[in-house]
Amino acid sequence: MRSVSSREPGEVFGPRMTLFADMLSVGLATAVVCLPVVTIPAALSTACAVLRGAGEGQPATAGRYFAVLRRRLRTGDLAAGAVALAGALLFVADLALARAGLPGAPLFAVVAAAIGMAALVVGLRACARPESLTDWPAAVREAALDAVRDVGGSALVLLAVATAVLCAWMMVPLAFLAPGPLALALTAVHVRRTVMSQS
Image: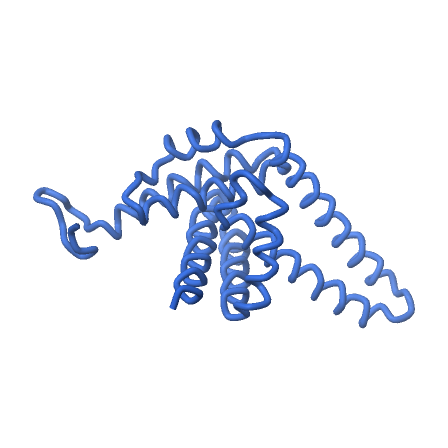
């Protein structure tokens, strides 16, 4: 197995740059699949699976991404997307109520924000788990345990989301590239947690 920093003859960039380019192509494919909104969990889960496979010597390409997506897309994926969408709409409605000047609105807003961030972390960590390819409830249960046991990893997930949102806010076209780095960050946090649990 060749070193991460080594190059093949005639290779202009090293393997790390190749992984970066593959991650961007997977990110673009993920962005396209995310457009119907209810497909967001399946799209991110597939991106994480493809990027996780890169560590096992499998190609991390847009072609492999769509092949994995075709094999796994099922009613459960759309149901997970519908639940995520309903949760996001409920969160936005709660914040709108808090801004309406109801009694106790500041405390309500803080509690709603904390619950929303916790749900976001669990949902994203579930996308990074291998179980999400076949069993969303199991992936969510394990992700909730990971979120509690690995607070540092949960903070990294929130940092990755904040970075993706900031990049998209600064330059809108970057929103189409954001899913790739986000999926890579989620995969790295999951791999980190797996290594920590084995040591």
